[in-house]
Length: 221
Image (cartoon, rainbow, N blue to C red; front, side, top):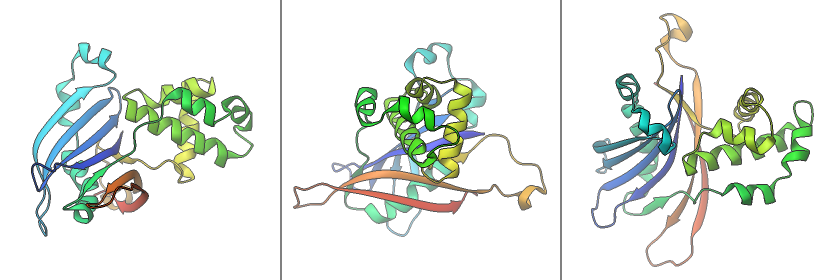
């Protein structure tokens, strides 16, 4: 199973109807996928271009396996972007820049939070985990390793922290792709997943920037 996150959607002002969607896939090999989408009102978005690279850059020397490329769920990535495109036709849309690790260290006392795991205030721990995870994705670094480094713990424990943050609804990413479920499992459908992306909307004629958080729940089909 691969975890896919929608990081950014941005309207191309010079080309009306065209949008850039940046996605990150965490798996055996982390991938950064940039889609150029074309969207008309009342019609589904279509992919006109796709750029794929391995991340971090050092791993690209090994090449991306054909199987990993075939497993990229382009249809589901487009579906993740679709609700926002419907809302944002005619305006620009982007997520805020990722937070650098040194800034996170100033914001969170990771040593104290580590002592709260696993029987303390898990909401506070999960809030820090989510910030580190999303920052790592934005910076193109492996998120599980970033959590392990921040909390000075093993990747196994970091994985459990990430799972708890998802369970509490504090960290929301989509689980898509991977091997199909066996017939008869949950009626042949995947369980409900959630995803969240933060955005900054720039409206014409306004100088201020509005930061909006939005969560969408839905069944991954």
